[in-house]
Length: 90
Image (cartoon, rainbow, N blue to C red; front, top):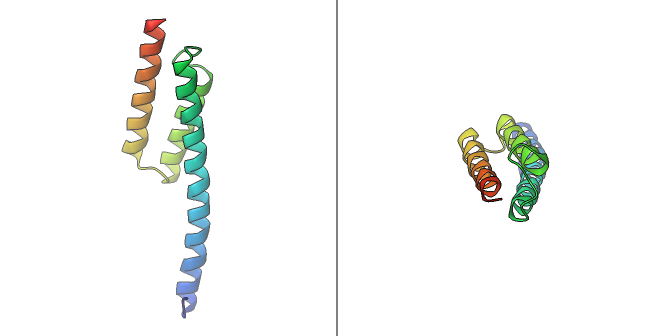
């Protein structure tokens, strides 16, 4: 355990950040999973519902620093590519 006031404060902050980051990552993962499920079931266009929400959550996570901006961009790119391919196939 920390012995200095500054170290104790840093520890408190790290716990808050970790909880927030876990929540955001979990939300992103759920949204992406739902979007991919919608794509597989061929009930989605690239700019509708679940895909749109997943893109929004990824952008939010990147803005807050939970995900690196290029990681979020890569995931959005892959998701949109899957959605466009599914739309072309149907």
